[in-house]
Length: 109
Length: 119
Image 1 (cartoon, helix red, strand yellow):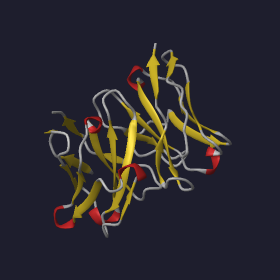
Image 2 (spheres, one colour; image 1 turned 30 degrees about the horizontal axis):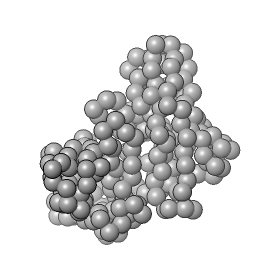
Image 3 (tube, rainbow over the protein chains, first blue to last red; image 1 turned 120 degrees about the vertical axis):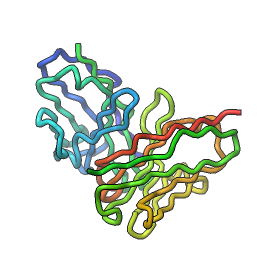
């Protein structure tokens, strides 16, 4: 089955840029979706299909996807961005299922 | 505005079944489908399957085939997920999440339903 690998944690100072990675075999050929989840809350879609930002998501959030790595970039990080972030793809070649990465805990210093 | 409201917390004994509901409002129910995703305490997200609201077609994760059934009641704009043969490791928060298809991201999520399996 398809595996997505995310670093368990990333730390960044307020106002700086955070780059959260999601690794997978030829992930550039798949559509990657990113979710933000704060404690005790449901996930929120922050990037759809590699680069699309849903309505209401600040333009500080952006996505890219190429080769074996997809990246969620958060510019001008704020304290409110502290959360768990999950990448997700549709595995069309293996189990025909959603696959989630293990999640990255973003800490704002 | 789009809203997905799930049923309340449940406690079940091992071997029992549970049915969780998710009522949608604020959009054309038939135009989207629903994913079900669960999260065990302190763990990550796990996809369970998808149901199309328009025709009830389903696509279950291999792990849950035979133990999970997803259904819709279009008259009530509600989807249901039935989980049978509960085990302690099924203790989790269960989320419904709307999507145009299972190949797309889920843009609206229910608030989650905690299911606790304990003897």
